Image (cartoon, rainbow over all chains, first blue to last red):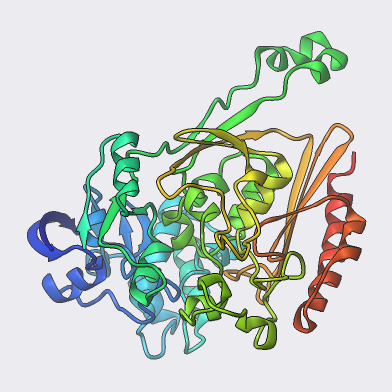
Length: 150
Length: 304
């Protein structure tokens, strides 16, 4: 059943119709053209689809778009100016790059809550973002470099 | 699929009575709807209906005065009890200093940050087994079939207690912690010890909980122990289900121990040597040894 909804993404309000059961990730990519958010496992394991809902990391592939409610969505497109983007390039924190948007979204939430995380805190906060290229050490270094390098 | 918009507990339970499926954090329900084990024509979102947050966190007045009245009176004071809404997320509990250590740690070690931010305590307690034969909708015994495929198949992650019919292992870390803590539950119609929420599936009724189809889990009461701990053996350091999880809580002289990843339901261990009565499958006998070690460490951690 199509049901209309309103969605605020990166500060922009959108009014749209979607069938109940459609995921936030599909709406972002296919209806709003925000293809920075990736769908990989499509079952909530890999973290490639991570977005922020009112600043809290969530898996958009298993979030039903009608359940977002009034929460503001932030995607990787809303983090263009974030220092993490340059840090990931500088520290060579990606190879294929497919997991990178989710990595940066999760890392941005960590740094917002904890501007100078320890390596242990980075490991705990980033556990839900898998990288099949295995760039973990450089991802950790990139986050640490923005967060004061501890 | 249709999305209902209940505003009250009564509206939500009425919808459940008509066969709708409850949706809280969605981390379990959404993948199960996609993969087939769960069917729903209507969803009932529970956000805004089921309580969220931790309440009654203040200590009793007697306990607040314990510095003045001395140790004897302080130990006689009633123990504070926390009321935790079933809609509270694991991420909220993980960082709450008022929450007993066993539950906080069980939440911290569960799943991934994103899943903990989305998933609720109530949903976690009611999650389905991770057994792949069940997840892949294979028509196993728990799904009404003739046999448990895991017994003769792959069962390294499976049970070593209560596995006579279904060999799956209940994955909830918080459930083990809450069992050890002696938590009680409030639903829309009754109060019960958490241990009575779960039951081993039988031939004539294969559900693993005593919850009615239209019953809503609302709140938990969590007593404050003198000491508690949760230890978890995993295949990797983070973001994995428990091979074995051990929770222990000491209140005065009494220690309660509960296990995750051990039986088709969260498992209360009557005493440490009750591990001698385990019934492991060939592939799960290693878990008994892991449990022994973790139980020893947990007892040491909560000792006075």
